Image 1 (tube, rainbow, N blue to C red):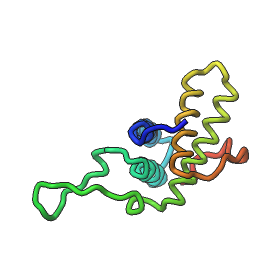
Image 2 (spheres, rainbow, N blue to C red):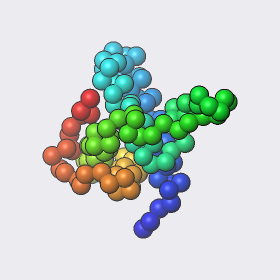
Image 3 (cartoon, helix red, strand yellow):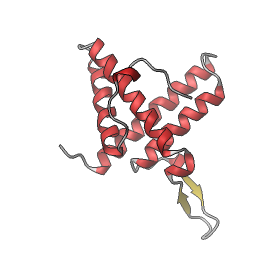
Image 4 (cartoon, rainbow, N blue to C red):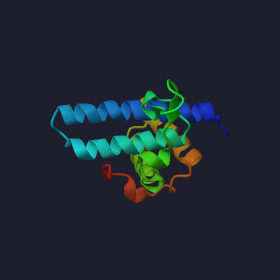
Length: 137
């Protein structure tokens, strides 16, 4: 099944928004230091850019012509290899959670969305050893 670029971009936008909100909560609660949280957010912003997402965070004011914006490219945000490794890790963890809770429709949908995104962007193949890893950053 081939999905449209718009569908892949929508999945990436949703993942970025959800993860940024979760990271902010973790930092606000003192559960995670800010610098690593910023690095993970940057990886997910790069993933969104690779997927063609249209996020305000990817638009910066242009120097010329005045009043225009430029889109930030994914490789300017984070290393593509690091971003794809984070996507692969998140996909593998989501698969493990969905398998552990077969009646959890949300977990199953998240795993499907991350599989779609990982396949579309060329993330590393599934690796069962990543199933319990926290984010690298």
